[in-house]
Length: 322
Ligand code: GYE
Image 1 (spheres, rainbow, N blue to C red):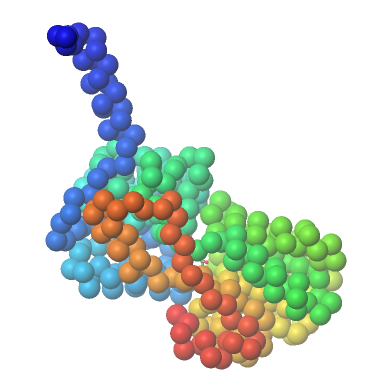
Image 2: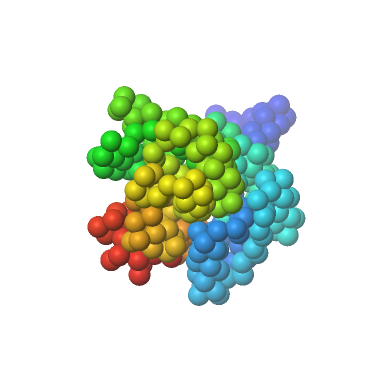
C-alpha cells in the first residue's frame, strides 16, 4: 500500500513533536566535565555552610565548574539567580528551593531552555512540578519522618512535660511544612500532649529566640519547645534562660539538623534530643548527575539517611557532627 502523508498530518506531527520536546526532561550529554549551577537559598547557618562546602568540594574533586549563587534569604533573588544560570547556559542546575511554590516557574523555564534541574534538600509543591517531567529528581531527607521521630521521642521521654511550643521553619519551605506535619500528626494521636502555640522563626537563631521569648511569656505553662532546626533551638535556649528557667530541665528542647553546636548542647543537657538532617549532599548530587547523563533510570526521590542524637548517644556522635 502506498503511504500518503498529507500536509495536515505533517503539521500535526510537527506540532506534537515540539510540544513533546517542551514537556520532556532535557537530556544531559556524557562529558568529561560540566559547568553546573548551584542555587543556594541562604548562608546564615552551619547547615547551609556544610551543604555548600560539600557541593564545592565534590565539584572540585571531579574537576567540574560550579556556578554558585546565594539568594541570601530572598526567594525573589533565588528566582533571578536561576534565570541568570539559564542565561549563562550551564549544563545542569542544582536547586535548593527556598519556598515550595515560587520556584516552580523557573524550573519549567530551565527545562524549556534544555537544562536539567536536580532539586537538592528542599522540594517544590508536587502539584506544580513533577520529578521525571519538570525536574530530574529530589535528593534530601524525609522531613515528615524527621518530625515523627522527634514526636516519638517526646511521647516516650516526656516525663509529664506535655505543653509544646513549636518553632516553625521558613513559611512555605518544604521542610517546615513536613516537619510540622510529621510531628503534629503523632501529637494529635496522643491526647495528653498539646501544642499550645506554633509560629515561624524562619529557621534563624535570633528570630527563634525572639519568637520563643514572646511565646514563653504568653504561655507560662509551656514545658517543651520543638524547633524545626538547631538554629531556632539554640535561640530558644537563650529565651528559656532569659525567662529564668532551665533549658533541658524545666523546658525540654527538641530539634532537627545535628550541627556540632547543638549536639554539644545535647551532651551538656540544655537540648534533649536532635534528629540529624544530613547536609553533605556533594557526593550524592554529582553521582546523580552522572547517572542521569548515562541514561540510568532514577527514582522520583533519593532519600538521605539521618541519624539522631540522644542524651545517651550525643557524646559518641559529636565527632561525626558537622
Ligand atoms: O534544616 C535548615 C536549613 O532545608 C533541610 O534549611 C533544610 C533546612 C535545614 O536552613 O537548618
